[in-house]
Image 1 (cartoon, rainbow, N blue to C red):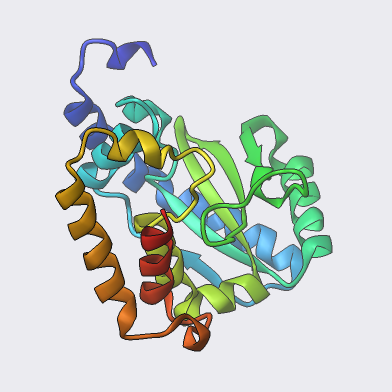
Image 2: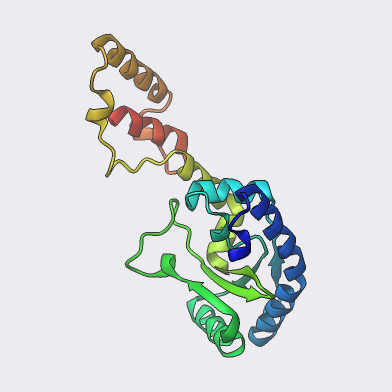
Length: 216
């Protein structure tokens, strides 16, 4: 938007958060309509994203551009399966096509890698009175996993990513003295000594990360 051209990211985030508050009731009405068509009993309305949260998100994901953050005003709908999800999208496109700005299904595509931890969902962005809102559509079976310990596992995976496909351990260790390398190995061996590898279970996430670190 042109009117944001001279504003700092901090001011933009505050302005968008205020706009989100004004759009929330209309977003609720849209979600209630969609839910009534599909016989949904549950809708979740997220709190307005705080400007501080939006700033962190835009710096982490969007190169510092707060206008790319689309979930200041958000709500969640829950569908039982993919067929219901497709029906929901048809309802949205038939009723609200003029305000749909994006339907993001990338993590539900079979040829697209899911988020770290395996989570998948659908995001629908709508222009509600000039503010971009977000409807997050969750598959109920996956949501139930998330509401258990799934989300905690997801955060652990994000914080301690063990994907070494693009990690050059040789470059990382180049130049270290032999005694430093020896100490690193000792630290790794001590970390995994508590749980022998033949006793590691899938829920021993900390120990699995320790073994990955030692293997590297």
